[in-house]
Length: 231
Image (cartoon, rainbow, N blue to C red):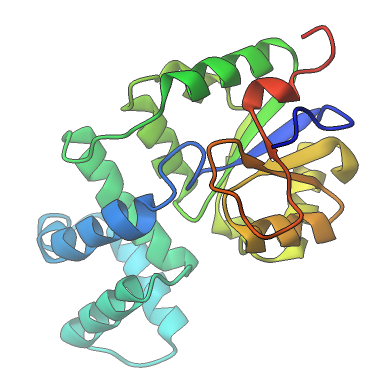
């Protein structure tokens, strides 16, 4: 494990799935929940404008004429396949937000991670979240978790509306949105493909120090090792 980078980042992009939430949160928790809750949620919220709009977007994305049963089957197939389809994620986001509000999902965030992020924010490092989960869900996850104060420390939250997590162009767009040179931004993620894409966009990259040793070139750092000198 490297002790610290050669140059402390001015901004840190935190992979939501793997840093702010457990690495397998989508596969192991959120997607199974949305699959099980889908029929009941759609029945309860059939008159919701937001639900109707996202269902129309999903239908348009499918490119086919589908009846209600066909649309439901397509949504289930995409969920089982873990597809990063923006309108699908938006529908799942509505389901997850409903569950978080009802305490049906229990967010996790370690004390050490929360304390380190607060210290980074205090030292002037801008913090951002980027994940497959819709940005409002990322926010709700943190707000309903053991350290809701971390959500207030984030400068921004991004999801697949800016692009795929394995697409270098997404990280270029993130740098433009953040307004900092890519070389001064670091992506912290547990997924090699995301780190490779960010590196192609000239971002610094690292794995969390808790991530198992991986056979790639990306270093592992403790969050407190990313503090600016004197921070």
